[in-house]
Amino acid sequence: MTSTLENQPAPSAGPGRAVREVGIAIIGSGFAGLGMAITLKRRGETDFVLLERAGDVGGTWRDNTYPGAACDVQSNLYSFSFAQNPDWGRSYSEQPEIQAYLQRTADRFDVRRHCVFGADVSSARWDDDARRWLVSTAAGDFRARVLVSAAGALADPTYPDIPGLDTFAGTVMHSARWDAAHDLSGEKVAVIGTGASAIQVVPAIQPVVGTIAVYQRTPAWVVPRTDHPVKPWMRRLYRFVPGFQNLVRAALYLFREFLVIGMAKNRRFLKPVGKLAQAHLHRQVRDPKLRRALTPDYTIGCKRILISNDYFPAVAAPNAELVTAGIAEVRPHSIVTTDGVERPTDTIVLATGFHVTDLPIAEKICGRDGRSLAEVWEDGMVSNRSATVAGFPNMFLLVGPNVGVGHTSMVYMIESQVAYVDDALQTMDAEGLAVLETTREAQEAYRELIAEKSKGTVWLGGGCASWYLDKHGHNSTLWPDFTFRFRKLTKKLDRENYVGTPAVPAQRPEVAA
Ligand code: N01
Image (cartoon, rainbow, N blue to C red; front, top):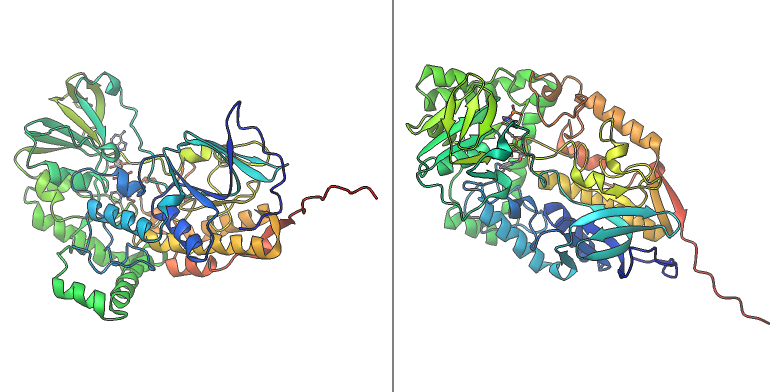
């Protein structure tokens, strides 16, 4: 990245702390951060750092190590288009294989040399005089021309506010912070939550625990999982037949995109999916009472549609109990529900999700007027094209507002965003801009576009409460249309929606005649 501002004085980062100058600071090294870094590298840009709070790359796939963790999108689609893997062991890969893929991909593109591990970001402030982001981390301070936040939406676990939880004498662990050293054999285990994480962890631990109580607030729609090992001859085809894996990928993409018709355009098209889920439940659960308790009362698709072949059998197992009464309190050795029943408990697994609509990173990033993104987003997350925010110059968000998808691969959305950000960076260089900032008008127009597209969708009108909606009931997380439309919208920088400030060449000292 070119820069004409190198002679500007560095703002103070605190007494005695050295500040490292860098062109681009990327926060996070999950799919989004790695995708951004690799894209920069592939076009010869090397002046960047990846600030990673943990000790390895991988993001949510590094952190979610709970038993049974796997992806519910086929790996042929849930992988980088520029780094396909002919050797996936299963159609839907498990966490260790995805994490290994990310590690390998980071090595293949030589990205690790740009990583600063242990760099938990405590603040990122825009200095308008220096036209730089000052980023403070646990591993040192950085002064960057551009900030890319790729911290992710599934990064910070949500801990429920249940009375007495802090008095529990046994083990409490969040699904995203699994303690593999803790032996669950023979224990009385409680799992709170029935989302995508819970339905994977429950069947994985049910055979080894003594008893398992699944505390369900809202039942999920679950469809069969068509998972299978990838045959060696198929792997050979992927490896040796040019374009074959791309073809399979395209077919998977198109098939999944059909779901958008039902979710966002015409709900009649969701009916067959609902019937499939009902038949799945009927087939797997014989007990009519349990079946009723597991049947959602909202339209399928309103919350994420889950896929599993072993969740229902695990809940119906003799050592399992589905608890539908609300949790009244946790005591040191038990959980008490609102119907007065007390269940002795050794370990509580919190499968209670993540801070998605209240991203913790938003509290740490402060723009031109000193206000944080969280403050600016008090009335809901807004952006231009899910990537930039007025008042936050030279800052780009990956996996920020309205990029989420429930039906297909998040990696597709990430690659769309990375292309947009990269085009913005190249535009800055080509035009010699020191500052690029989106306009409030563009942000407002995008907000209206999202609101308009969200009208009539199953996420707003499907009769459920979900983390797709913020506390005001607005869709601030999901892209509410076909994903190819998002790709088209973000293919190139919408330059007309940005104000660019040219770089001021560093002044030469005047020479006396
Ligand atoms: O979290 P969730 P998750 N008392 O927020 C319940 C991705 N993911 O970790 O529905 C009692 O979906 C809550 O109940 P309710 C994927 O994007 C992907 O499971 O709000 N219960 C819900 O049942 C997914 O969407 C994969 O009524 C409480 C559950 O906890 C996202 O991660 C695998 C409660 C939280 O469900 C999050 O999934 C796993 C309380 N106080 C995850 N608070 C893939 O395969 C919350 N709940 C790619």
